[in-house]
Image (cartoon, rainbow, N blue to C red):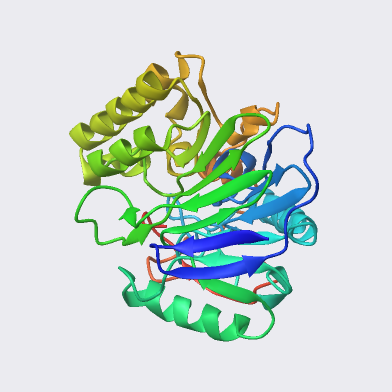
Length: 333
């Protein structure tokens, strides 16, 4: 048996994982901005156990006043096909928060699995609260759903630990809070931390938590420099410095993607991080060349003979076919 513990109160039973294995912790980014879509969907193999993380993918309804290009729609289809395929292999599904590029509403993704989801009663409001309510209702029955905040799952081979809520960006952000996941592989002495939308981290609190988590590999959203005019150059520089502090304190390797790769200047804006040799994009982690299609949308449309009708700020873009939902665009998710 394994123990499931949350904030020292809840305890539940889970069948034990498979017998000990020498296989190392395997980290498979399934979708990301460097792979052409808005996402941080990831599949992790801890021994014989699969963990699907933040299984959502979307496109920005508008960028440079333009709708998604055909290349982006094609990338979204490929991303959702990968997420669906890996969902069938997962035993656990983890959702860090309720922005639509981080989860699906389709119960089939979660059916028959242990689902750890951001607690909808704790530091969740507005549109995220409405999405949370809808998701929990949809999964009541098909899956075993548990509020993730502060949970720990311990088996012979690995441990899962979920953080308390961390700011989605800087302290006092109106964008809400996320929870981070730590996966500890006992046999390989690896600690993988998935920190979702901490955006750099912009928050000194989030940076301190990451240092305390002692990752060997860290995957997080990079600073949102594509909206640097709104958030300020000082904030982006502090986020870069915060990540350098995490690197220096832990010696970890970092996969940095998501918001950072929406900036067409990402290769130069984050030179201080790339030059460490320990920070890579999700694409580079897979041995691929980055394809940040959203950041290149203006150039992608420039090559099309018939230009699109420019979209208004209130327009909406259809998400993945599997979800039959739509998502608001903008700089927040």
